[in-house]
Amino acid sequence: PGAGTVKVLIFGATGMIGSGVLQECLDNPAVTSVRAIGRSPTGRSHPKLDEILHSDFFDYSAVEDCLGEVDACFFCLGVSSAGMSEADYHRMTYELTIAAAETLLRLNPDSIFCYVSGAGTDSSEQGRWMWARVKGKTENALLAMPFRAVYNLRPGYVQPMKGVRSKTRLYAVAYGIVGPLYPLLRLLFPGQVTDSVTVGRAMIHVATDGFERGVLESDDMNRVGRMAG
Image (cartoon, rainbow, N blue to C red):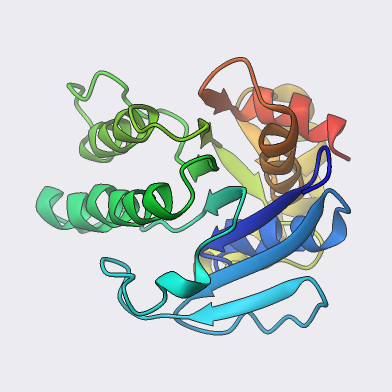
């Protein structure tokens, strides 16, 4: 690629955060191509976009030919821990993420891996909250992998923008109610509040320009997201 440009692979582009990240990648000239891998189509059409339909996110042997020659992976897949056992959440969070990362590291050893984690993640892996321990374990495993760089993004509240909607009806209603208050929330709680545009722009910025740490909280994303705007 040219200086400051990237070819991007997105996991989870049909989810709320992933959909916002995809939109920013399509809009940003620093991203020269986008591949979206998922179980269902994104519903988007764009000259930069190629879609890879795939159902088994623990085994990529059937689609490995489509996963090479990328500069950055934006991993936006995630599940809620609500009602899940620790074993099930570990499988769908840690094991699923690491399966993808190991495949991409083998195919693209000089690439950058950006993982959407969450505010309150427990890097010690010893804390009280199960989800935070598992996310911490996932972050730590990624940081130990010899990618060119790994960035763990820890958003708190994320306001969907540019027509992005949550697929969960209850969340979609809640976001619609909170939306008009978002500018005030971001002013009052800059360390805990961000939006889908900013998350996408922050990912693009760290992929093209780097960041001083491997973990970005919401205020970090708000700061570097403005640079990529």
